[in-house]
Amino acid sequence: MHYDLLIIGGGIQGAGIAQAGAAAGYSVMVLEKTALASGTSSRSSKLIHGGLRYLESAQLRLVRESLHERERLLRLAPDLVRLVPFHVPIYRDSQRRPWQIRAGLSLYAMLGGLGRNTLFHALPRSTWNGLDGLRRDGLQAVFRYFDAQTDDAALTRAVMHSAQTLGAQLQMPARFVAAHIEGDGCAVQYRTDDRLHDCRARIVINAAGAWAGEVLDAFTPKLPRPRIELVRGSHLVLPGQLGQGIYYLEAPSDHRAVFAMPYQQHTLIGTTEASHDGSADAVQASAEEQAYLRAIAGHYFAHWRDVQPLRAFAGLRVLPAAPGRAFGRSRETLLLRDRQQQPRVLSVLGGKLTTYRASAETVLAALQPWLPTRRRKADTRKLTLG
Image (tube, rainbow, N blue to C red):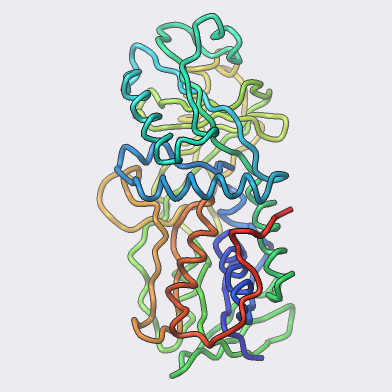
């Protein structure tokens, strides 16, 4: 078999590229070694949002794009993506002052186009008692704005299903074995059960996320590993459910942003940012990270001070390698080609759950000059997901 695009990885990025490629009329094959969204795409913070905290690192283009994609997903996937209230409490000892939060939310609204879903306001003190037991000592202001929440794994499955209805093929479980780079494409081998399969692809897209380096090691001639860092984001699931929406909290120890949110009849709190040096297959929340999140939960909600979490989980973000904290580094999607003209291998690294569709269209635009002319089948800006 010969494909225009062969995609390695069935996370949200791989599913999004498969949908975009099939919608553009290309022949598409996806190889997923275990199950859709089995890695990072099922271990995120479950948010479809602009990223209010990215304003502090001046990632304005990313925030604007994310807010526009959020609005699109609210329309296209109403059963999977829903708007929920977010609360930002400000205390006497908070690093950010009320005027700073108001200014940030104003800019956030402007980047979102000042639509109905970008409205925010300060809650009157008379309503603070109803905020799920949020600590009142030293509380100076509470702002409410709106963003969206999803089931990340279900969204990934819906996007892949959309790709398949447009003609994309999915092999799962299927393990990528090797690829030989040739003048006009790649000869690929993959394994399903005990069978070894051969196929050809004009362009192989490495969307394996935290496993991207391992995938590149299997190419001949050998391709260099990208300069990336794996950053572990851990979450706790706590008993009891928040009734008023999501809380955007400032960690007392290091002033990072941490979310507490309703999740499967319980509460999810996260995430951390810790460098991960081990195997991507063995990622789990460390004892230190769990203690960090438990301290934040107990600091803001007294009823969680001595409560054992129901479970913990962790996922890996792919960020460009750089000194210093991960917080300020770009969340933009990185595209690395084996060569600038007529690429045969493209690695897609990083990116956000919220912007998977826009990232996929960027990938297709970058590859379009080197792909054959095909008849477009659909526009991903209009395809509903369910």
